[in-house]
Image 1 (cartoon, rainbow, N blue to C red):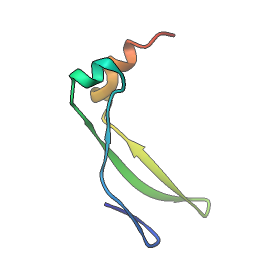
Image 2: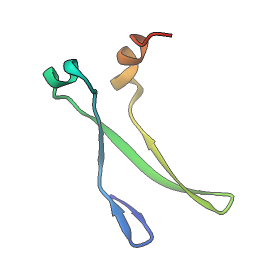
Image 3: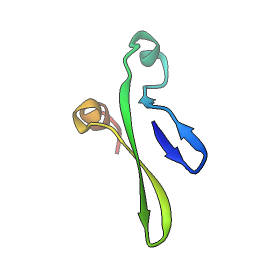
Image 4: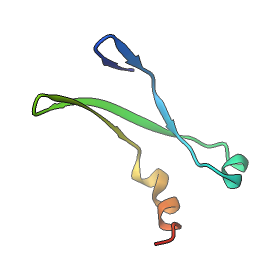
Length: 61
């Protein structure tokens, strides 16, 4: 869990949208971290590249 002031954020999941996504019920975990950059608090979210590489390669230019 991530904490921001008095707020808590649970773990995230990335998933596909559309007809094909309904057939595939797989999710990819989303890692979250807070960082302070130049006095501003920023939320970074990330997923493993290997979990989305094939999906991104299939996108049209």
